[in-house]
Image (cartoon, rainbow, N blue to C red):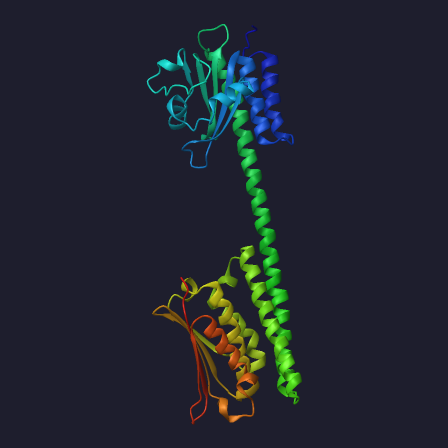
Length: 378
């Protein structure tokens, strides 16, 4: 059997070729298998393996073997996870050469059907002192043990393997970031463009319905507004599913942004206040209803109340979410509009759907207070 020296030009070329394979479009298992085959060939080992550590660097997540035939692999069964001598290299990542593998104090033994293995060489796979796994070789043919020259050769190949593993993981992470960025962009487009257009269309329809005298037409237009509300709810659910992060998921921010949009309809700035763990305690389901109620109630203030002031308050207390909308206008019972015309029946239905309550108070002195209260779903 030819003896390979690390200073031999042919050997250096093979090591370089193994490193350059990283730039090719190869799947990581195929590339690592090639590294193991090169290490086995250059050292004269009968068997070779490469173990890739998990992200926690606590055990072997992958184990690639070379030199075993399919029947032997089937007899061995499950791949090792890093016990015994293999585990020693996980906890103490230093090169290890043994003349008799079974004589080491941490030798774990072999499972039934495993071929006998004597001489052993293990080399950690590192990149910038971070351990990614280990290269294992056993049974140097014609020799009682592996040499220091073998250790140097395998160490050079371990560097190539480490670069390959890091390259693959960085590529995977870059793809995950790209997917996340695309999903985030789509979610923002839905939120900032589509939902706002639907919202504006709903406001215009509400304004037209309030001026229409024919009850049937007004009712049908109200049904269209309800459908728009449901479409907005579905779109918001899609946005959450896409994983949109940032202010759009913050209930306070959403309500403040909504009131800012409604300022043109109302004619003045509606005040807002919050009490309790609003952002952390209110579920997405309640949030969807909450935003629709705020929009409906504040739109009523602008269309019918003739108010000069209004306020929205959201609080969380005693296992409930409570929304209170107040204004200093004429009051609910002062005009010709019905409960359905103001959308109050819809607000009540939404509260009842969530096992909550809805109340409207209009004192003789004027003004209106809407209270929408639902239990928080855990």
